[in-house]
Length: 106
Image (cartoon, helix red, strand yellow):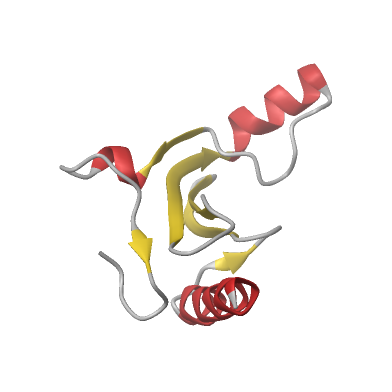
């Protein structure tokens, strides 16, 4: 059942994110071109393998010129690396991860 919930979450997230103009990357990572080398970045991470489904969405910003420079220097930066990011749970007043039972988020 949890596998079905995770699959349904990933499918619904993909449909909504790509429908809103976001580009799907590896896993549940999405980017949105903001122009001038900047990209909004969203990682829809799951923080549990069992009920309830706990999510750890991470949002950030990628700056291509800086990431390109880091890649040239280190040779290790993946193409979807984020320049700066923060877990949404830590940005919210309650500072905790969102939890869902499959029907609504609380």
